[in-house]
Image (cartoon, rainbow over the protein chains, first blue to last red):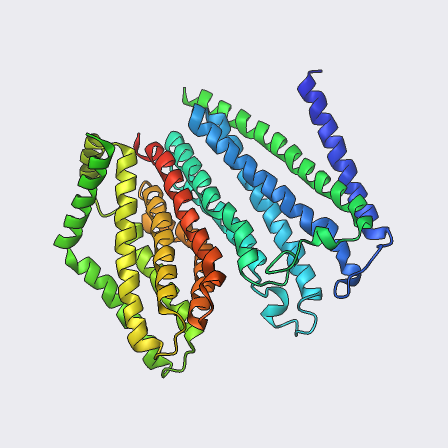
Length: 237
Length: 221
C-alpha cells in the first residue's frame, strides 16, 4: 500500500468516527448551559456551524485549484476545482437547511408558520450564504455554456477566482456592517467567545469531522472525475 | 508604446465612441428619471427617505447592468481583435475600468440630482457625505461589472449569463452602500460611514488588481 492510500484510509475512518461521535454525543449528552432563546435547539450548533466550516474550506480549495489551473494549464486541476465547487454548493445547501429549521424554532417562534419571516427573515449572514450558493451555481452555468473544454476551463477558473476575490471579503464585512440575528453580527461578539467550554468537546470534533468528510468526498469524486476526463480524452484521440 | 499612453489612448477612444453615440447615455438618464417619476407618482410621494435610498441603489444596479455590463459586448469580434493586437491586455482592462468608473459616477451624480429635486423633498441629512458614498459605491459597481461583462461576453447566451453572474456579485456590495448612504441621509457624522467608504475603496483596489491579473487569460485564445 502506498503512503497516500494509508492517508486516505485514516482520513476516511477519522471522518466517519468524528461524524458518528458528533451525532451521538451532540444529540444525547447533557448540555452544560442552554441559552435563554435556544434551549435544547442549541444542539444544532454542532451541525449547522460545521457545515459552514466545510463549505468555506471547499470554497477556498476550489479557488486554489483554479489558480493552479491558470498557472499550469493542467486540466486535472480544473476538474478538481469544479468538484470542490460542487461540494461547496452541497455543504452550503446543508448549512442553509439546518439554519432554516433552527431559525423557525428560535427567531420565528412568535410568528405564524405561514409567515415567510418565520423560515427566512432575510438576515445578513443568511443572505450572504444564499448569495454564495448562487455564485457557485453561476459557476456551473458558465461551465455548461461552453462546449470547448479548454475555453470552459479557462473562463470558469477566471470567474471562480474573481468571484472569490469579490465575495469573500464581504463575508467578513457585511455581518459587521448590517445588524442581524446571528451571533457575530453588528456589535455582537462571536458565539465561540460566549460559548460554554463544555461545548468545545463536541463542537471542534464536529468541525474536524465534517471538514474531513468533505475532503474525503472531494478526493473520491475528484479521482472519478479525473479518470472520466482521461477516458474522454483517450476517446477523442 | 508605454502602458500609460496606451491607457490614455484607449480611454480617449471609449470617450469618443460614447460621445458619438449620445443616445446610449441619454437613454440611461431617461431610464433613471422615469423610474423616479413612476415611483413618486405611483406612491403619491409617500415614500420615506430611507426607502428612496434603496430605490436609488436599485436604479444604479439596473443602469449598471444595462450599460457597464455590455461594455465588452458592444464591440464586434473584429474590432476587439484589432485592439488586442495594438495594446496589451492589462491596459485594455484598466482603460475599460477607468472609463466605466467615469460613466458610472456621471450617471450616479445626475441621478442624485433627480433625487434631490423630486424625491427627498429637502429632508436630507448630509448631502456631501451622500455624494462621496455614491461615487465610491458606483465605482465598485463599475469595477465588478466590467470584469463580469468580459467573462460573459465569451459565452453564447450572453444576456442570461450576465444577469445570473452579476446580480449575486453586486448585491452584497449594494447592501454595504445602502447601509452607508442610509447613514448619510439620517445625518450621522462622517465617522459612522467611514468604515463602509474605506471598504468600497479597498474593494475597488482588490477588484482592479484581480482584473488586471485575470483578464489576459480571457482573451488569449
